[in-house]
Image 1 (cartoon, one colour):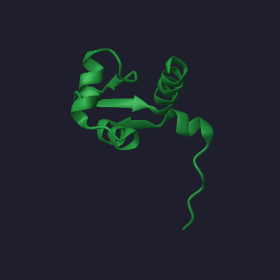
Image 2 (tube, rainbow, N blue to C red):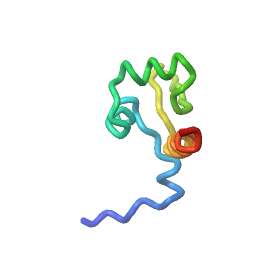
Image 3 (spheres, one colour):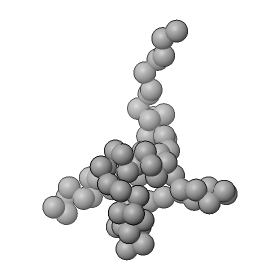
Length: 70
């Protein structure tokens, strides 16, 4: 069965786990948590179970801000 491509809207609503984010950014979990503590990480959503997620749209905005600051 073929899967249809993810729409741009649905992709922007996608939520990444910390592990998925770290793989995408090529960083360690400790680097992510260090950035988060210093206020330098992308905006996160804390779920009721305490785990964190990062919206794809927040990651894209954060990356754009990082490029602008460079």
